[in-house]
Length: 497
Image (cartoon, rainbow, N blue to C red; front, top):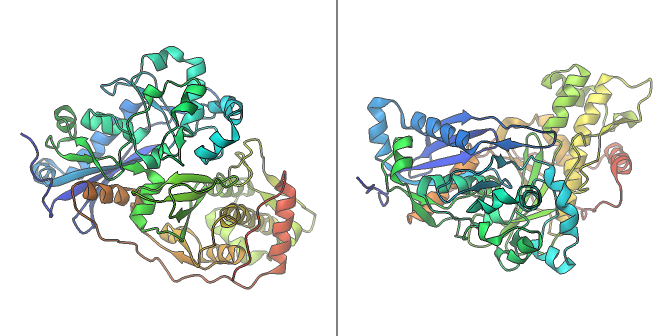
């Protein structure tokens, strides 16, 4: 029987956030309050060095398991399922899922973490400068365009047998609705999207040997892209006919969920670090080393500084020094700023913003007999902080620095590290905590697809952290950091005013 509650203002919104290693499913009430959440994991395969692939059918099994868990036990599932008014999607960006019209994959999905596309960077750089400007993004491996160019060279028969080359959440929507579509927030991160025209760059695809027919039709992120088809509904334990929103990539969905607005900057620190700065224009002049992606709304984009080595470098250093997290953070009290000349470069996996060097490598320098473990540990925290500040500078030479930087993730950072960040950035930090931000963004898009609107629910997670006065020891340490790690000039942020 078809679903009939899509217009019910009291209906629940079901958000599916398809991550790299797990999926999260959350139900939200009409006021944006999360009701129930569940997650399920799946492997990321590395069949060869530098490759990163996944089985989309494993994604689907995880989505089914998490959705059924969210709906509750046998006595509750039917009542909850009948109240789902719409489904919203967010997901990992930059991947490639080649599939047939019926969503059957023609090969494993290629993840954003896959490096084989580096072979095709030269072909991109051979494009006319005016063409690269339309793409408005640095050319890096792991983005869909470089991956598809590699597949076109090495697996042409697979591409010929495929109907679509989709982003992960777009494949999931095809599985849910039977209709293929793409949308700007994810498409703008493929290196196959013309930011100036707000459309697929089909000429770039054809030049790289990629058949443009593989690129799905574009729809607005908040549009209704179809309804839940019967076969998928039976798997999930939901009624058929529920409206499904087009959705967005995970980062723009998180910006939408956490309430990020034009002129603000949001810093999130995990395995890597990302500083997202929304701008009003759909197309901004390209900025060296910085990504420009469309927001999950009708207008506007965001500049994204992507730092590969944050938590991953912290964890590596902690293991190497034989310290736990508390011991690493205690070094902020146990060693003086500047670490008496010890410098740590965190580039353990290469780096993106601002140096765009996959071969960059990290390590300590300036060590002497007088230095102890505290100095080495503190230099790690300072090195990660300096890398984040360099990435922020790359954005803030192009747009005015924000009055306050929103620090996403609530209590994820120690107050002492927050103070160090604020002082090096010379910007106040406003800790925020919007649980399930990407899922909430997906739910917000689902609500808009059926003519509803969720209220903003950004929550503070502590007092604003003001920057300390400029510290000459930190300034000298940052100069050493830049001299040790720079292959060329780095952008300079205007002085705070």
